Figure (cartoon, rainbow, N blue to C red):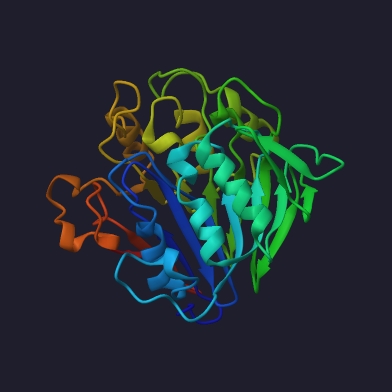
Length: 335
């Protein structure tokens, strides 16, 4: 069920080693990322959460084996892929297949991978999805990924600074958008500032400052860009902590500029290289600015399968949070 008018919900979905955040108003739904790096986790976990929050939707592919197929299709107004890495988009093709997605936002930076090809194939096959990229739109509306040519009829270009109406007293503004093929897709992260009444939510994907360094190191890369170009817009009550709490992000200068009350850290057990995130020094930096930290990995070691969202055998699934934003009240979170 949607929240009442004037109230908003921000869902930090425990997808294990990945990211998925659902934002709801009484008249809209926005999904920012939907992916995981955990091979034992099935995309149905994201769908199970969406079914509980928005209503089940789609066909037999959209539910776990043995479950009845939904008898309806439910609308999601906006789906945003922050950047083309599997831990941010591995379940997104199924979301687009199962739900009537009205708008799909993507940097347009092509990643020659199967999961990214499947996302664009789902967009091309969707009867409802309007595709938006920071990259230029080819004249024939055809994109090639992993040896497949995909036609996307409804496709246009967006730019940094664009503001998109979500619903009553709600909008999001694009603060960073880069469609060129940079060395690391993290550098293509689509950063959006979401206004929910008087509250502000900053979603940064894997936006970074540079190499793995202590948060006291100089700010750089996307975090520096955001400070220099969008200092007022990055002030937020709620921050999705960049790159799963890695030392590549969350420089102290950036955290001081954002000044979040709540910090959302989505991480899991799979190593990034040789590192398990989040980094402890990043958590300490968040505590130092007075932020309350919500983490999706706190019960990974003792999260029974029958308690996991979706009931799969992948890690995590017990640490989802719902943050409720009501008029005249501070944001309140519940597991």
